Length: 321
Image 1 (tube, rainbow, N blue to C red):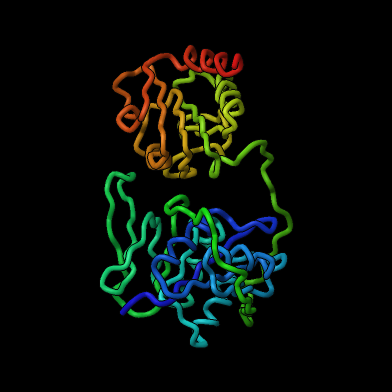
Image 2: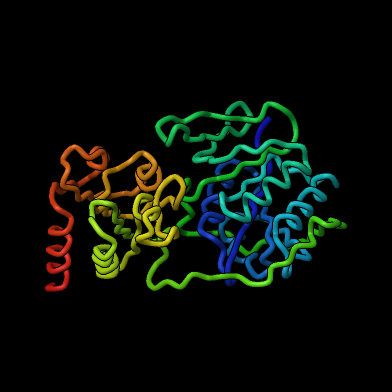
């Protein structure tokens, strides 16, 4: 047995496909002969999805103004029950991805492998790699029964294709049929957080601050340095919990997973929960006055010093260029 067909739940916003969707498409293209997408974003994204490896895009009807979970899961389940059965379905670990996966698990009577950081084929089956115990250990998990395998994939687990070479995918509409009360909830409004510069998840440079800053007002240095470097500011869980910055800034196991070209950890000791979210960065620079701080164990460059002295000097040097 080999993996012949994988479906990817494709998420998009403002006509642009999410970065995690493109990452899953790249991995799916490595593993399966056929890669197809299911999306609530409409046929407009078929070009981008096709360029990244999808041969067909199933657009789900009836999602306008609705929660995506009930409608998308109902449409996928109806297609599977009609005989269009993929070997696996990949979904991002996002709000919509988790909602669709949970509902789909019930509809198809299929388990879900969550927190997947890697996928590989072994003896004709897909095996997911899942970090456990705060990312200190990896376990390999696979489905032993028959039916569709459902995988929830962590962002930044794979690299998206840098030079897409495909063409626009063919489209086909899926309908969910009668969903009863499960589809009665409506979306009345959406809140889009304002931001300037690149998003934290996609920035090439991330400057993150932690408790070592001393007080909330000092986080402005993190903002200023990130802006000077054309990057995005981030934070440890400790200062998010303390109310210094919003949750959207948090990097770590319960926040965002980032893999920038440069990650600067300023005043962050390096708790395991934080390391899980940033240890895949290409170049890690740590600034901490504690020479024994765990962050130095993974840093490419470590500066032992007071962050409140190091960062102003760095900002001054950048501004004088």
